[in-house]
Amino acid sequence: MHSPFVFRFITDVLNDDRQYYAYSIIEPLRTALQANTKIIEVPDFGAGSRSKLSQQRVIRDIARSSLKPKKFSQLLFRMVTYFQPASILELGTSLGITTAYLASANNLIPVTSMEGAPAVAEQALQVVTKAGISNVTIITGNFDDTLPIWLKQQAQIDFAFIDGNHRFEPTMRYYQWLKEKAHDQTILIFDDIHWSAEMEQAWAAIQADPAVTLTIDLFFIGIVFFRPEQQQKEHFCIRF
Image (tube, rainbow, N blue to C red; front, side, top):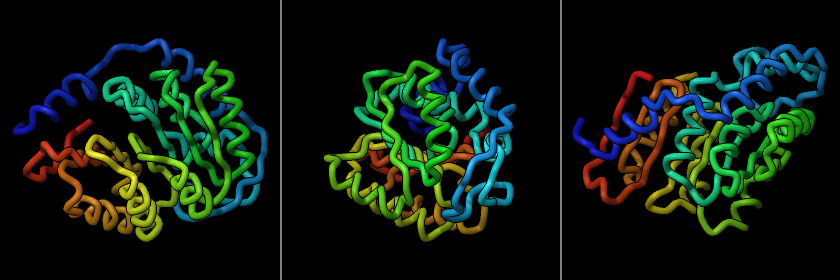
């Protein structure tokens, strides 16, 4: 391990096994979603779910196929706790579990979450409300429409979790848009980087970008840093 920064990240964030209070609030909400038999309308904006998309879907099926596992949701919570970004963006609210974890880490940090399906966003809003969270704004619509408009209003991007369209071209487009507002300490997290050949291709292209100085591959997610003090580009694959 050559990077003290990565060593501290592993020690203080990845290996932090403390049971934070927010965990006990959010996980019962996940369990409730996994048992929810309500049917909602879900438009198909592109690839991404591991189960076949349809216009009408049962909430528990969405929960089982789309929610990030507890391990990774809680990692996002710890990353926000550790890095303390000034603001957070989430592309792909889904049912709001990761949104709740991102927002619970610090209730003074504004979280903007974007979701393509209004009915799904409505369920997510119920989740964050039940969790007692008030620092979340959910924007609905196709990312290609909502993200550029929102970015024009932002001075910079501090911390973004991208869990949306799992194809090469849209992923790279969102990356380029976010990079335009990135600064030295910006952190971008991409979900499902090994989900498909197109996501593998996108992850490789992001790693190769000269602006990127450090990446961490946790298999299911990839973390991107632009830190200029990292004078030699490094890529780490870590079992998590």
